[in-house]
Image (tube, rainbow, N blue to C red; front, side, top):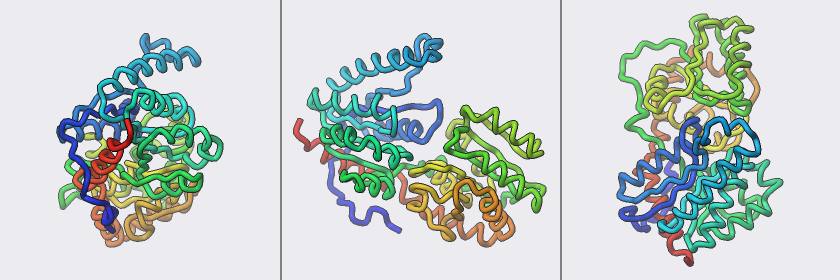
Length: 372
């Protein structure tokens, strides 16, 4: 499926363009942080001058990060100063936006400040919880977006969510680095190694992955699970793994850099995405790029990027029995697993920089055409 068949080839290149890129950076290694870092690298390689305005800069001193109200002020005030200075040097702002307080504290101020300084803005909204957020905040979001030249979202799912609230968005998909995320060499011994690359937060429901593993091991005692990510759920999940008697069959790998994640995926037989809320999960795209068959929940934007039974197997959220059945279906049918992995790998080629860069360049050209 060609995602960009109707996208015009017009649009200026990136050489010499001064971009104020506003967004988070790792750590933690969430999807938006990774995409912000990767976009900065790619734009610079294409000749753009990128000034990063980090929304999650470390607290100084670090101890202040433990004081709820004070930590917000200590992050917000320096952030506003950096925004103001960057706006004086930028041709445009590219604002990576999320739902909830992140929108109100970081995205909205960036939009308004750029408007006051006459800098055109592209808002790149990526929040997986957009439906709930816009249901309560669509009026204030719409007021801010009146001062953005372009609203870009990474998936048809988010485009439809914004349309429900009378706001037009266009698709600029996530970018996958196929030079880093690539399949394992032929001849690798196959087993029952399962991988989850999601942070240990409640919405990503790693509990379901653990419970699914326990069910899978009743039929495949050699099954094991690696979970790459950090977060507040770590103690509870480790306790649950012990309670389920999983022992050494579960490895909590912690936070991994991109190269280590890619290498871990190449060791996987099945990649799991147990999330309860999602937009366009990088973890799914990167698993496809590594030639690993995916079992994912069918939430949010996931069905927009993979097709059940063709490029992945989709199951209901919070349903360890269904996830376990899908895993066993792949482990017990190597031909099916290979076919799904090959189809997924072909699908993910639509998300390379070579494809997405022309879409982004066109969006930048229309942003720059906005009245300064």
